[in-house]
Length: 432
Image (cartoon, rainbow, N blue to C red; front, top):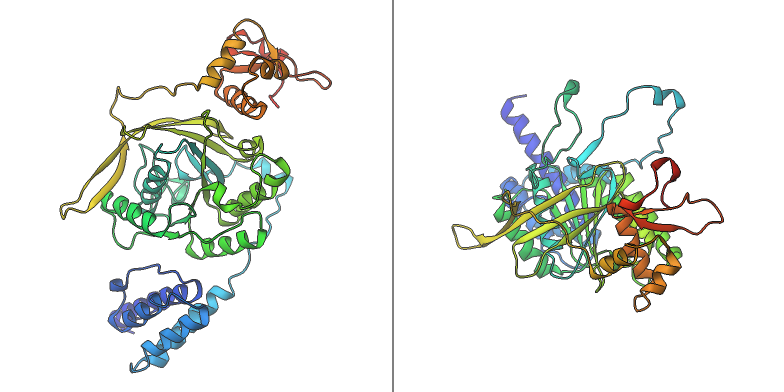
């Protein structure tokens, strides 16, 4: 078979795979002009089918190609591609033996080097107007383009062939936009793609608000299957509160299935899952302490609506070093006067430390003279809800400002003091 025919076959298979994704999931993975002309009309017809389900989309495809001489061949190609999607095997549980741990530790897989591992569950918290969504969109496009993000490489695998340096390559991204809405996300993602001069084929996919409930395992399984079909390495969920309707975020028992399902989503897709979450009026992340303990990396985003600097700092990290980044938000226009957006690392000298909230400052003031128990701290901050005090105290422990002053033994109340007053290390146990 000639090279030309091989190329034609490859193009037809790519088009059939794209049609199968569009018919099965309603997901347009490639722009129509990247397909052969004979396939583009059918692709556009299915894409225009906004109502109905799989059957209606398949009918739209068949009607659009009814008059083409290769109609039968095209239908068979799409059927084969649909069969491949529907018969995709489920992930199998991997069980490890003790002897394997005596071998070299497997290399860490990264989504963003030193920031987000794969798989992992991550939390991005900040006040309204802190540019959390803009930051997440810039991250999405950087990962999908294989570009550095704020000085950190985006990598699809930890090492290249034969143990060479990390392989930096485009990685598909899925955004579950459950807050901004179709018009807003369309506009913002378009600006960010233009800001990065990204190609139209860039693999960033988004789902507009669909009323997901992440307390329901079946719904999370459906999202996991779609993410695996796209081979995504990053899943962004905007925002956490919007995917758990009826769940009390302050209740541990209510939050347990949500956090468990999100962790499972990360593992099954081998992706970094990034949740966008809000702080309360006192600058503390909302909800149960289970949210903080259940994620691998929690980052605080701080930026005033009128400023172009965005500060990003670790509040909690598991198995990776804390990070502190300062980015500059660049809002501009393309040569054809279209709005653009991208982040760039802030110039040297403009990085600023993250200021402590008023509640954190008050807690530190209380601890400046003597170690105190949690009940004593809540009594000293009687005008602040105990849950807020606990969250702020937890953040101060994570950031190294405050440490346990007792051994944490059973039957003893936790005693807290400032880090520079802490007893010798041998007298301490891990924080609760």
